[in-house]
Every structure is written in C-alpha cells, then in structure tokens.
Image 1 (cartoon, rainbow, N blue to C red):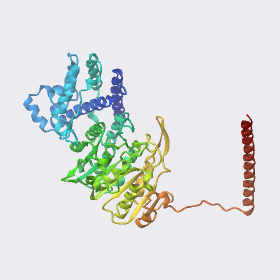
Image 2: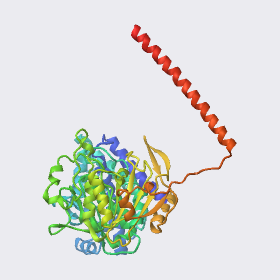
Image 3: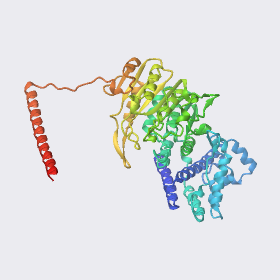
Image 4: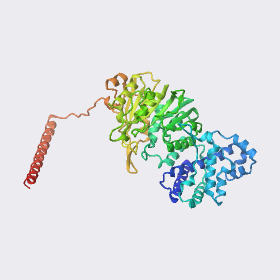
Amino acid sequence: MVADFTKKTKDLIDNLKGTCASYGLGNDGNESKIITQVFLYKFMNDKFGYDLKQIDKRFSDKESWEKKVTELQDSEFKKIIVKLNPGTAKLKKEHLLSNLYNAQNSKNFSKLFDSTLIDISQYNASIFSVNTSSNAKIVLFDELSQFVSDPSRRDDFCRAIINQLVNFSFEEIFNQKFDFFSTIFEYLIKDYNKDGGGKYAEYYTPHAVSKIMAKILVVEEVKNVSVYDPSAGSGTLLMNVAHQIGEDRCSIYSQDVSQKSSGMLRLNLILNNLVHSIPNVIQGNTLTSPYFRNGKDLQQFDFIVSNPPFKLDFSDFRDELDSAEHKKRFFAGIPNIPAKKRESMAIYLLFLQHIIFSLSPKGKAAVVVPTGFLTGQDKISSGIRQLLIEKNMLSGVVSMPSNIFATTGTNVSIIFIDKSKKDKDVLLVDASKLGETVKEGKNQKTVLDSNEEDKIIDIFRNPKDENQFSIIANSETIANKNYSFSAGQYFNIVLDLEPISKAEFAKLMTNYSKDFENLYKESREVEKEFLKQISRLELG
C-alpha cells in the first residue's frame, strides 16, 4: 500500500512539473516555488479534512466532507476549527480545493487562485511564516500565476494545476512516519536543491550521511532538547536528528542565508510533524548576524548538526567578521580571501568555530568537513583541532568514501564533538574503502548499503580497534601527531608477506634484472631518436 501510494505521489509531482513545462516554466527559476507550494496547498487541504473527520463524524465520508463543510453555519464552523490540531493549517470555507475546482470556469480564475493562496498565508501567518534575521515574515504562498509571462494563459495554467489535484488524496498516509515523508520530500526537491547555481549554493546531504550522523549523535533517550543547524539548507540533517530523538521531544532551530532553502525547510517541517518549530526557521546570514541569542550572548544548543558550504566567496563580509565583536566566536581566526580564486575562501572554518561556540555545556555536535581539514597545517585548521583535543571535546572522526556527494569531488569526513565527554579517548574511523560506485547523471557517486551504514554506526556505539578500519587514540597521542585526526596515521603498518625459497628469490631477481636491462635499452633508443630529431632541426 505504501509503495503504491509513493508511486502515486511521485506521479503527482511529475504531472505538476509537466504542467509547468507546458506553460513555459520547465526548468524556470520559479518552477520550484510553483511545485512545492502547490504540493503544500494540496497537503494542507487534505490534512485539514483528515483532522475534521477525527473531530466530527459528520465529515467521515471521504467524498462529501468538503460539501458538508460549506453547508455549516459560520458560527458552528468556527467552533470546530478551534479544536483542530495546532499543527494543522486553518482554512476558511472558500479556501477548500473543491471551491476552486467548482469556480474554475469563472472569469479571472487565476486571480481567485492567487488570492486564495495569499489569504491562507495571511490567515496562518502566526504559525507558518518563516522569519528573516531582521524579523520580517516570509509567508507560505506567492501569487503563482504571475510566473506565467503571458497574461492570457494564466487562467488556463491555474485550471490545469487544480485539475491535477482533485483526483488525488493524501488522507490514507497521514499515519505514516519519517521514512515515508523523507522519501517523498527528497523526490519533490531533487531538481531544485543542488550544489551550484549562484553565490550561495544550497547543499543537500545524502541520506546515508544524515542517518549516520543522527544515530551516532543520539544514543540515549532525551526530551525537551534543542537541535540547531546554522547552515540548514532544506533540513535533511535536522529531520534525521529530530526523528532519532522523537519529533515531540525536541525543538528545531535553524538559520540559512538562502530564502529558497528556508522555504523548503518549512515544507520539510510540515511534512514531518514539526510545525511547532517553524517560528525558529530564520532566513539570514549566520556568520555576520547570528539570530538566536540570550541577551547579548549567543544561544547555546543541546545538539548541533551541519554540512556547511566548504568554499565560498565571502569577501564582502570578511573584514566585518575580523573585528572585536566577533573575536571571541572566531577564536582560531578568519580565513584569508584567495587572491586568484575568491570563491575558494574556506568558509566552513567559520561555521565550525561558530558551532563550537554555540554548544551548551553538555552539547553534542556532528559536522561535515573536507577530509583535508583532518591534517591541514594552516593556522586556523590546526588551531581548531588543537582546541578540540585540549578541551577534550572530540569524541570521534569518520572519513567517508570519495564521491559520497555526487555533486562534488571533495572527500568528506564527519567530526563528532561532545562537551560532556569524560575520558580522553577518541575513535578514528577510516570508512573510505566502503561503498559501491554508481552513475548519477553525469557524475560518479559512492553509495553505502545498509550493512555498511550500520558498520560505521556500530563501531561508534561499541568502540574498538579494527584492522585498517578503526582505532582508539588518546588525546596525548593525537597531540604528539601534530593534532592529526586522520585514522590512517595511527594504524599499525601491516605487511602481507609470504615466505619464499632462495631459488624463488634468485629467479625473481633475475627477472627484475632482465626487465631493468630491457627498460634501459628502450630508453637509450628513445634518447638516440630524440637526438637525431634535434640534429635535423638544427641542420634545417
């Protein structure tokens, strides 16, 4: 049943994309807004009906519940609305999908369509709006018909959208959990949240990386905890950690400079029963203007996860950060702006310092970094590593396989930080040899199977030395290795030698000598030919 419904949902998304393409919006910059917002409107309409049926048996009939709503007296309807789940969008009678469907032959239908979505936004602004760092509100919906450049086609476009929605219902899957909705969300945004495309690229963390981070980070039951991501993107990491903790046991906090990503994160929260955290979704620059504060001090969090952008042109803000106001937070320093490639500024080092500074006294963090950070000898990288060891905050590191991200060739590792850590041991894991290489579009990608994911998770939950895979190193040993976090530098060198007889050894050496003589002769012949060519050129 779930597999069948997953297909139907993906078909709906594909059909909406097809409609956009038919009206000149395929691969248009606004297509992502149209697809995600129409999907959200339909989801909210069906969730509204589903919740009404739990409240009042009069609406239990699947086919006629919307008709029965319209027949209610306004006063009675308002009494029922008050009983709705706080995470359900409150709709007026005229907001229902059936109202738009029945009115689609009216003149200026696109205006009715747009005004309906805008009114839903305003009616639910207190719960569903994303805030900016300056406290402006970004509401749920835009006037979608305006993205069709030809005004004469806007009515038809809106009709086509509505007709895609009426023969489909989300009702039968509202009791599904995280795994279902994460799959649907990934499919919904797969074409809209990729590395690249502008100064501030949106980053999407592979499911395997998110799962590993969440399961290693959260190992015991907790409640009433805060989970933060200062470069949240569409929220993949946050959703996995919230699911691991329990959606009703945590509050999500996020900040991201991208308005598009913040909108997608909001959708992710709605799908995953985390509506209560939407007011904590902030669109703004975390490094220059961190939003979450306790008075003048930065707010500290119980769990932090992040896959920050590794390199970015941050030249507009570099000098602003290199000031007394930010000195304490960026304790190891501010990366310089590369002279020839300004876009190669190592901005992840700023996020990593911000994360360490934002952890509560018992806080834990998991952060994706370039693998080069583990051994980098620049002042900032080595300074951060030294602090993590000297303050006994590093609990472990795992180096992931190459191409675990299909959209970047950068090798990545995950560092795990624990401010409540008591012992001096650090688990270093080299998982770089795991996984299978597959083709994804034009790129190669390494995919871990579930057993390999579990192998990484299990070694962190039951730390031990395992030949060429994991090793437990103490902080003193790491300090003596110039604070290297690379597992390979701590493994014992194992030579796989096989005993051979004197005769076999002599035969091998004879063969090597012959090979060497042949190579020498070939090189002399090449040299002679080269000298001949030079002579001809000089004579010519």
